[in-house]
Image (cartoon, helix red, strand yellow):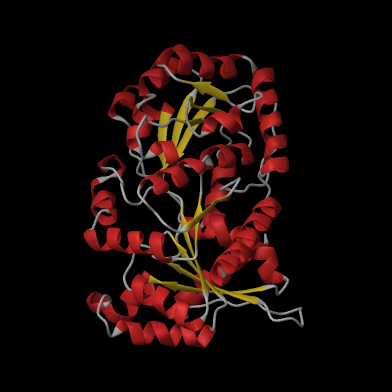
Length: 388
């Protein structure tokens, strides 16, 4: 896939000590030059921009470069927050000469300098945010909580929210949250956050494997552990797999090898290949009832659907819309989770129908092409906001 090749080129460039990727062949017109600024080559950057924009990059309509906090650390070590780094930043920006700058979940240093420099150079700016980065709870993990709630990171996020030309939000709920905080920037919400393509077609087979894919969200999984215990006890042929960094809940130790943990895969291409190979019959999307979760996106539904898994998700969450019309099953209580999982286990036709309908929705509403159009419109909107 073009996206994967583009991602590999970036990773290769980083390995070789380079800090950019550009692609501007095949066209006589000058490409839009997009400078992405992030803490590192984070998954959000890959999913929200490089994946949907890969075709535009390949067509020569866009030229892109990555400037990251990680690069600053590699260049300056512990002194990466010092003022002298700004001269290096200015040099990188000057080399690339961007027409637009996109801060993707950025909470690192020198955001004030970079937005000032952008205004001076006549460059439009976007801040892409897909979580409430001003209120990251301790439930996601102690170290991540400390990381995101460092006063300097919070200051950087607040500055970007109030000083870029356009804030690009992942969900309407997140937009309303930011408005309640007093963000005075133009805010645009995308209709979709994560795009997908079918990697494994719906398969009418007996359901024997339930899975959960996640990172640092053990508190979400814990909400459905009581239901999983009941289902595993009553269905001895069913296995449960965890894919990611979440450890096996101690309550599930009694099931021995029927509950297994698969280590996370950092490279997104390899992650998708591994994910598809697991052949989960059912993927679960539990969300604890927290303020942080109310503004999250439905990424898990997209990824589960792409690999042919039927979805059971927490009700009264972001999953309500994508799961309607039999594209998933919603559950609120332990009894409802047990009933939903066992219905899919015992009725293979029902499970097959759910996956088939979900994959139809994926093709029609969550395509890479649709997200590409959305992101390109965001870039155009930022330029319009800058010129107002």
